[in-house]
Length: 255
Image 1 (cartoon, rainbow, N blue to C red):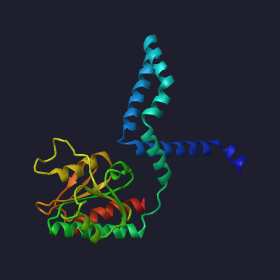
Image 2 (cartoon, one colour):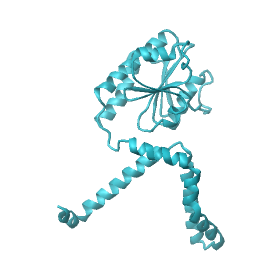
Image 3 (cartoon, helix red, strand yellow):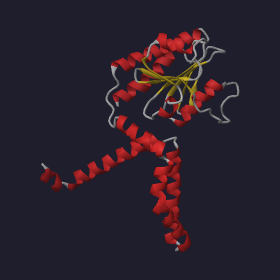
Image 4 (cartoon, rainbow, N blue to C red):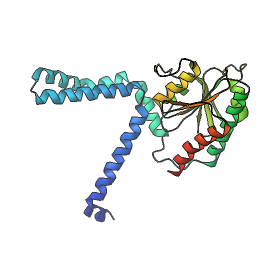
């Protein structure tokens, strides 16, 4: 078997390239939105400057950059210890090839829809985040850990005005409520309507930085909105919300 593969070297080359591509893709997902991503951009700029210095024979600039590279590895380890630990932990948790969405996860979508409509009918504000491929670990760590099964009753009790954790967002992963009272980044985009409050701006802000799906319930109007990919869908009813969530998550399963 091994000898046969060696004779068809192109098969091993394709496998090698595919494996490296998957690893690089997963690493980029892990560091997206973190200080490590900014560091990666900075290293890319330095690499470009190094190539230009060699091409134009800028000896002094080249010497400075080469001196920096000699200490770069140690500097990265010292400055980014927390990010490195998180990245290694997430790599251990991540599934490189995701399996089909289980039926229990689809059932949790219905619980989320029912809870959103019930909260809207009572004009109770809510911010419900559904994690997808990009990890929301940084936001989860800010909130109150729960790790409880998704249910309409649980979500309504969390967002009830008398609950000590009703402020902030609930983050759901699969069929589990991972954390509550999580604070999200506020979008500063000028195109966002001034009539939208902090809750909507927080939902859009997270949708701009990650691939998460965010459901927003307005406590002033009872309107249900959904933020995804930096966009906001408003005035959703039960059927509209259910259709969007089903399309997003069952399409991923079919793929």
